[in-house]
Length: 111
Image (cartoon, rainbow, N blue to C red):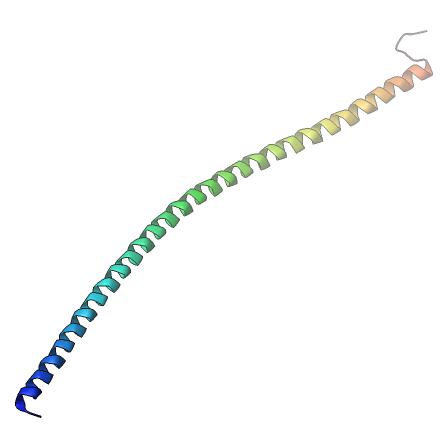
């Protein structure tokens, strides 16, 4: 192989190296752009998830407060029902005593 052929061969190899380097740099840039897009999308997703989580926590807190109020109201109703049951029992007893006194003929007037 003559020195001129060797030089031509060396030029072709150098051109191939340069072309390969350019391709690699272009691919690297493309990958970097894709990575940046993925990072950006991930950050947007995290922010959206955080906002949804915050809204969900607010709704849960409202539900908890409402449930606590409902529980207190039910306790009040149960206490009122217990009092009503006691008053009904006392009224029944008084009414029964009144009915019994009427049956015996003692209606409160002296005879």
